[in-house]
Length: 148
Image 1 (tube, rainbow, N blue to C red):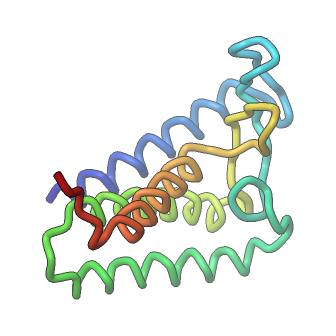
Image 2: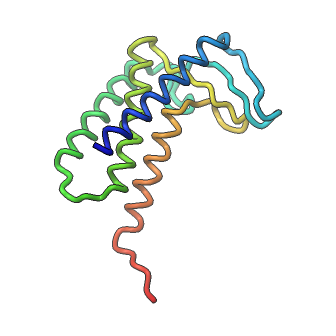
């Protein structure tokens, strides 16, 4: 239940923020939030996370669909009750679904978080990144116990 709640929360936060951006801003319009450090900038991204590989929408539809299926299958066979792994996978799954919905509906992903020193991204990208980092953290800490 916790897993599904996390997936739904990530997906809904992503959808709601994208809907607000599309309704309030014109394409390529930028709204400064913290001076020259952070803005809300509405762009259409035909690539992957952070604008990498532009124009590969069909490829990313297939890859997103495959990732979603693999995560669901992995969770089905995951016997241990490692909530850290499940939480990381929930963040990745919710974000992947959010961006897949954009690609299927529009042919691009709506991005808007603009930190100026980094390509513009969205909440789905953010949650996917946090989920990946949490899984990597878990992988690199497996078997490492502190000694006293």
